[in-house]
View 1 (cartoon, rainbow, N blue to C red):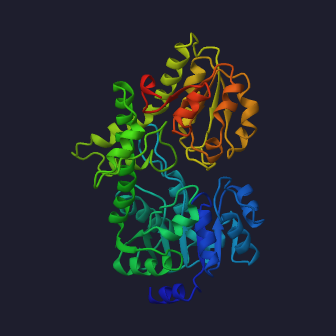
View 2 (view 1 turned 120 degrees about the vertical axis):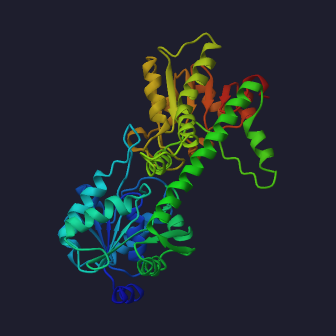
View 3 (view 1 turned 90 degrees about the vertical axis):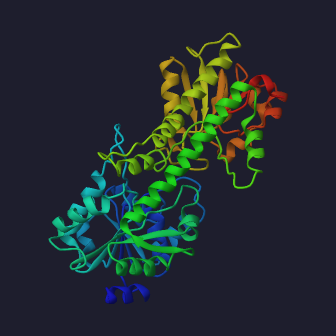
Length: 443
């Protein structure tokens, strides 16, 4: 461990990152940029080829990432491969693969298990393995450790070292969050955690808190569960405001003037890889034990219902004009789960579109960052009976309500993110509905 710590401090440790997606690619670029020799492992050959050609595989607006990738690849500090045998000389291995849940909200660790099975036989003696993926409490002890010991034929702290340092990045801020957000650094031993802190100190300009593995697992799953619960509260308040004649956006502004209040933003749904699944990972940590879990599942149900509420708003608005959803042509603006991102994982728009199609509506989808839905939104809006804003892309904030109104066959706009100003929309002649606003009390 002392030898490894010294190699890390002088940047002679050879680093590998397994999984070159939204987390792994910026992590690999950052360590390469600071002077480490970095090897990226990726099973999708097209990604390998693109990375080695210094072409970013992430399409969203990611400040600095494409330029950083070009710099480190051209400098010879980063290369990618699909061959696990190339890991035989790596001193530090970071694992950044997806850890989804299935339809029963049970963790699906196929990718993680596959990595551990492939890694064990080629593992360098005394290498440090760090799981950056988000995992359920107890996974390091009950899944990762036994699999790695079995596949490598070695014992932890004798033939290899093991820890977890859950990532805290998000699309649109991958490099900024990687550099600027604190990290919880979990080690199987305090010495391992301290060595991991020395490693991350090269790329993280914030607190690095050394803890045990279970604490690191808990902190990551709890912080995303907290956010999910808070968003669910905001969404439920939005539904109340709509019903009683209030405006959730004004209410939220005034609530947050009170000390220690931070009401979150309501919206058309919660997507992405983390928030829809991490609460279930937290809950799974007590699976089979006598712990009454109520708030987290209720919050998940509220947030999952919001795309359906968008359908209800659209249906009610069209019905007020004597139109039905069946046979209507609907423009959906935004398919990524987050503004200015190309990430469509668990997209609320996917749920919305699926339900609109159940009503036999024709759906036209636009998203400036998702390749299959790119195009000119003005052309797509021609002859549509309504437009639905699902994502707060900056491009949509520039939409002229008068222009939109002139293109639609029926001037209906349903806004799930409060992208368009209510007064401007109505002044343009649009029949405007927004999450959390009572139609009767709109100006």
